[in-house]
Amino acid sequence: MRQKAPAKINIFLKITGTRGGYHTIASRFIRYEKLYDIISFEHCKTERFRIEGVEEIPLEQNIITKAYHLLQEATQNPKLIDFFNHHIVRVQKNIPQGAGLGGGSSDAATFLLLANEAVGLGLSIQELAAIGVRIGADVPFFIYDYPSANVTGIGEKIEPFEEEPPDIELRTLPLTCDTAKVYRHFRSHYLDTINAKLANELLRLSCKEILEQIAPLQANDLYKSATDLCPTLEKFSQTYYLSGSGSSLFRKKK
Image (cartoon, rainbow, N blue to C red):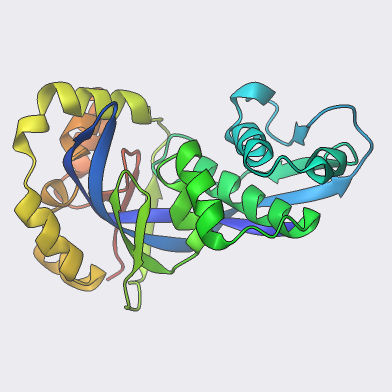
């Protein structure tokens, strides 16, 4: 079994508040199918859960391992353990890490979907999404698999947005923005700049309207924080939008 795990792009990303250690957001996610990882299950007898293809990430730190453990916890199904005693997970990685494109979250979501089907767990999309949000804020979006969606709360509220996503020119710089550090920096330096009214307005606009009417720095609340930590981004901030916490940049194709 194998399945593509597509990237995502945040057309806009507004911080609306905090919830404990999390930040609440309002964002438009679009699926970017031109760039994807591939997740596959390959028959191989093994004594423990194994992932191959991303050896640079220790097994217990891999987001797919977290997805596996949470799926075990949620189902308590011995068939799941047995299946992964006879199959390894292989990842063909194409989405760069630390690029704001949700590669790890997409991999975890795709793993959940594939495992649910392969083992016959019978979980609904809603049940998988509830597991997904415990893995990471972006995971539920990939489980629902909408081309375009408004994402709010801490990432658990997904509402499809009916539109034809714009043709995007993506530019990924050879640098990594640490998501946790960008969010911490935002909380320390920019939390008092949040604009809930604008966030609600953007939720009603199409991607095309946002890219035509809203400046890059205004569209993504994390842009200044990411630029503070990754100064290379500053020279692009007038002409390119930032996806997530960076470092990927994008604009509508001319």
